[in-house]
Amino acid sequence: MHNLKIEWNRRGLKKIMVMTPIVIRAEWKTFLAVIFGSSIYTLGVMSFTVPFRFPDSGVTGIAMLINYTLGVSLPLMVAVANIVLLVWAWKELSIRLVLWTIFSVALITVLMKLMENMPFAHTDQKLLIALIGGAIKGYGGGIVLHTGASMGGLDIVSLYIQKKYGVEIGKFNFYINMCVIGASAFVVGPENAMLGLVAVYSSSLTIDNTMSSFDKRRLVLVVTVDPCPVLDYVTTELGRGVTKIESHGGYSGDDRPTLMCVLTRRQTVDLKRFLAKNQPRAFMVVSEAREVVGKGFKSWMPK
Image 1: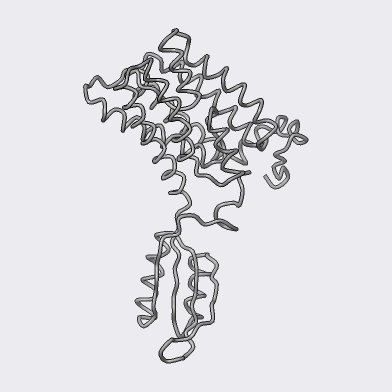
Image 2 (image 1 turned 30 degrees about the vertical axis):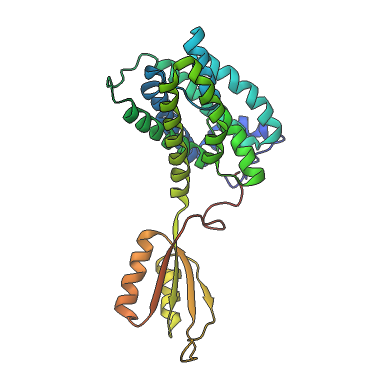
């Protein structure tokens, strides 16, 4: 990856194609995540949505309505619609996102065809199916989106909106897809349309929670009269950076340096044990950091 850098731009596209095996090795985690997330998402569509004639969101939802009314192949409709959006995305979004999205869309299209006759749960508990199906699709979608790729459709538009305006993807998808769900009532009936709305809401929440769960850390503040041992432990044993803030006791006026660091859940427990054993008079504050951006954590912008 160091000699590729990887040149995710149109000028470097030829190099990327020629060095595809190296690119895959450099981004093997993305490769596996896209395969896993796309498979989970497709399972949610083909086993928890289509068999019950629930509407869905975005491009897939529109393709489903056409499939329900005209019988046109769902995988074919999804592929055609995404080709149009990908042509637009080629000019508006990063080349990396577009290439990974092409891979994801191709994979989902093939999996939809393979899963057309997959067994599904026969039950009258449609509300339960809608909730579970939405959560499954949202989980798969969240994994793919977290890698900086997408599953095509309105995800492409959502990522553009997020990049430009900072709007959360799940919430944007939910509101924009109200129109698709509303139109579906005339095709699948009011009851299934409402259940489809439940599934979309469940999916939207799961997408946001899945994406944020990868970035959650704990913000730790340690107030102590002897900061050096704590600083050494965090930097050496835990491998994390520390910011030292000069502070003073409000009542005593004595120097009370404050150490600030961002840790994982496990590292927070380790630090707590260290303080309990070596500095029991220290003061430790722990809070949730929903998102951490910067070196060693999440990148500032999608690649």
